[in-house]
Picture (cartoon, rainbow, N blue to C red):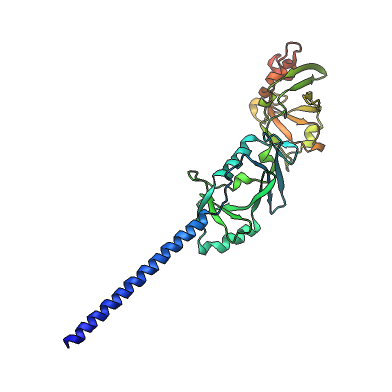
Length: 321
């Protein structure tokens, strides 16, 4: 009887040892799998380490909107669709995002199917060219529910991941807009210097200027249900500027008075005294109408040889409405 009890206790100890060993091996496998998975995630190279040699980026979406960014041969200036200078701040933000974004986490198995389904119908395709060769293609989806991450997937990958910028709280998809308006440089003049033949109501003022890059429009205006650019262009321009840049290229800028704001205190004003409309050449060249503050043109109109400011802003000099 005593021997039987000893055998039972011994058997129990062996079983306990086997169970402990099994638990050890299971735990170790779980940890190893987790480490392997984490290593796999970290190796998903969504980011671009060297953005200085990125010279072309193409953005396209499911709405068939496509825009192409190309650096000039000196790698100094970005152009949109070959001829529109890109806003440096907007482009720098996108390049900074491409460089700093990292994988935050994989997508949970429960949510993965729905995320892939949404990305199949709503995504922005980002093609990145490094030294004239296609380096990487990333599909960018929407933001996570907490808006602290963005779903992204590499081309030919099996599944997307949650991407973020460490230290930044927010989503990243808005930095890859396919809307041309978002990227346009707001410089009125696309060259640093040149000769201006300024005409105010048939009065000529010829002068040369430098640092023209410091003159900006407030915004670009596109047609909608309540506003048509052609209605503005039917007015007689109060200002014409024939601009010849240092490459001997000539363009014509037209300025149009803007109607005053519909408020009681402005009811006696003939036109807005803060802003006017401007456009290069005509709408046939796809140039958008610009909203410009008169203050931005102060340096242009102040000229000792021509009393241009009194023509530019006559309400400052005589008592008229």
